[in-house]
Length: 314
Image 1: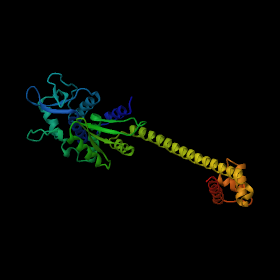
Image 2: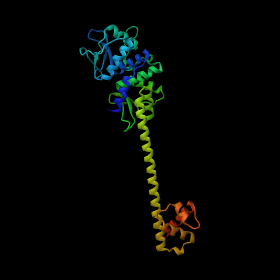
Image 3: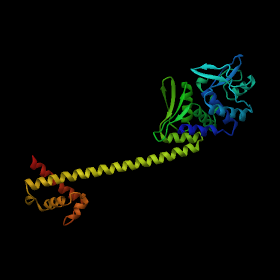
Image 4: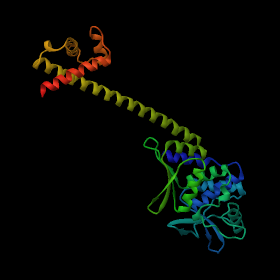
């Protein structure tokens, strides 16, 4: 099972305790996976996409809790095609449909239908708890999250720009940065920062998925930290080995083409100690000298020997 599926399964089980939050969840499902229009009899009806069982189960559960309406059927007769997708009517009578649509503010008091392409009526999400509920079911309808082992990416795929802009505003109300990009004909709202995704999971009330993601983030960050330290150590060792090899080459050249007897005593001692201890660090080399010399003093003498070797070569 993918991580995205695990998140959705957790969100599908989470239902707001307050009726206004339940209405916000219904509004999210109707806006993101629904269609409102005339049925075969000409009455205003509520249609849903039939291909996501988790969304349908939650929708019918919310109807039972918020309206005490018991139905679990999408009628095959009377299906409509809208924006390239198929929708089937929910088995409700005209009075039930009107009651639901007015409660989630898709229909006003005069029977006018809100254009769902612009998103839900802002009054539905005026409370912070209702914003959380709306985001939760919006993600259930059209959200996805990548495998955290491969990278951090959460997105909502919206059919209309107005829906994406509304989701962006709701998410940014919680101080999370979200961006929108046009992908083919869809408006995709996405979050790429791991911290932002963790915060959004918390807002949508998915604690189990949040902890799983945090654990993976910790392991990943520890692994990256260890890799950086190992790479740094390898680079330092490589640098030290290369420097020591050049120092030995320079000293050997001086010995063969100039002679140690022509060097001043401090440089001669340094040259002999370096040849005797080719793998030693600068600090260790300084301790082999008599009297001992600090790291900067060793570095200074070796630089003098290198400069002499360069002059002899040229």
